[in-house]
Each structure stands twice: as C-alpha cells, then as structure tokens.
Length: 349
Image 1 (cartoon, rainbow, N blue to C red):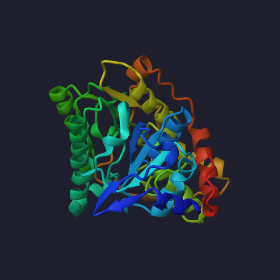
Image 2: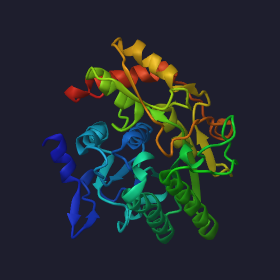
Image 3: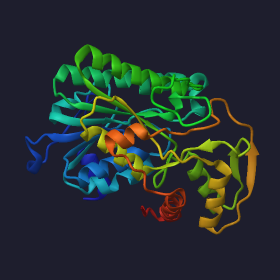
C-alpha cells in the first residue's frame, strides 16, 4: 500500500465525525501525546520529536486550504512511517479526541489560522473560528473528559505588538496590532479562564519568528528562497532595518517539549533566541548561502507588522532549560537545503 493510501486508511469519516481505526498492535493502547496542527510547519517537527522520545502520538489537522495539502502531506511523511503515530484529518470541534488519550497525556495545541496580513477584512471570521472557538472547544473536551492532561498552547509574539525598546518580557502589557495577534491573545486568555475555573494545567508558549525546513510558503524566508531559485526579485516589506528574533524550528520544538514535561508554576514562556538581527542582515546571509544573485523589490510596511520582535527568554532558560543553539546562518543553510530539494519531494534537515 502506498504512503498516502496508508494515510487514507487511518482516516475514517462517519457522517461528518471522525473515528479512529485501531490496528491490532495498537488495540486498547492509548496515546501519550496529542498534537493539533500536526501536519503544519512546526506541528510536524514537534510530532517527530515526540515520536523520537518514544511517545505514542495522535495527530490531528484540518488541512485548511491556507496553503497546499501537498506540502502538508510531505510534512507528515516521516511520522506516518512510524507505527506509533496515527492521524485524523478534520477540525477539532465536535471530535472527542481525548477518548484516545491516556490519563495525563500531553496535549500540544498548535492548530491555528496563521498569518498577520490575511487577518484583516472579511477573512477575520476564519481567525475567530480557528484560533478562538477551536481552542475553547478543545478546552471543553479536556475538562469534560477528565484526562488530567497538560495543555501546551502555541501562542505568538504577535500578542506583544509594538513595545518599548528592548526585549519583550512575559509580564509586559499585551498590545496586539493585528486581528491575528488579537485572536492569539484571546486564546491565551481562554486557557487561563479554564485553568482558573477547572484547575486545568495550561501553559502558553509565545513563539518568535520561527523559520527552518517546512516553513509555510507565505513566510518571509520561504518566499525569498523561492524567488531566488526562480531568478526573481525578493519582496521586502519596509526599509529592511526592522529587527526580528529569528528562531530555528528545532529550538522552538525543544522549548515546547520542555514546556510539556517540566513541572513549573509559570504559565507563560517566551520561546525565542533573544538575538534579534536586522532583516537586511538576514538577507545578506541568504545571498551568501544561495550563491545566487539577490535582487530586492521594496514594498510599504503592511498593517499589523511590528517594528521589532525580541524575546526576553530568561524565564524559559531558568524554568525549561531552554537553550537555542542554532545560529541564523546555520538555520538558513538547512532551510535552503530543504527548499533546494523540495522539487523532488526530498525533505532535508
């Protein structure tokens, strides 16, 4: 049976609801971890990390058409080859996911409607549905089931918006400047409400400017590498002097896993390298790595883009032993290797 035939075999759609077909060797065995958004950029890397540490992992993803289903299928290849992984395709709402989880299983909630620029206008309802209502539905299911799981939520540095100069601390007053940032903050608040009302163990990880292999096609480095390979000018929003705390996806995943495994009273963590660089500096690395001409087409700064992202990660270092190790140059080299091999379907790094 082919790879994608296997994936279809483990997805069962019954009158709009999802059920899981248990193979004999996994019969009556419950999962150690649930990853929502498991076919996405970060979610697929997280799923592999959990499998590598020996977890039985249940993944769920709606395959929202924000970008191609083909890339999401490629993202899942390695996990689907592991017998300890099972996948459900569909929305979180209305599905009793927790009946497949053992008591105390880790729940990693990464499913979301991404993108700052797309959150303006008529598409805002998708952000409310997929970022706020889906989170509330998952929390209700966790409370109802009594699985006593720890919920680790993938939030965003977008909740900070524009802040005073310097690193952004977890106790800074949130100031989102985009509808996307507002919905991510709303989901954080939703988690805190359920934690207070039902003694739910809920932790938010605020992710800073993530990049690396499998990066979404709408994100900056993916677009830039694609343009260079196509011998086109790269589009750069703003003057290129904006600071970004670029953080490699592998380091982000390490932080998320630690947030799920560590006993701490803290409930919010910044996951970022705390080493911001100017966008023009990053483009200089791209020019060196690709060894191809780089032409730049500058565009106005869009609504909702902050001037700076800069994580104060001292809390995560102290409580989660979070240690970002991948330099921007090395991380970009790995992403370039992945995108260079992408045409043949070969995932590198």
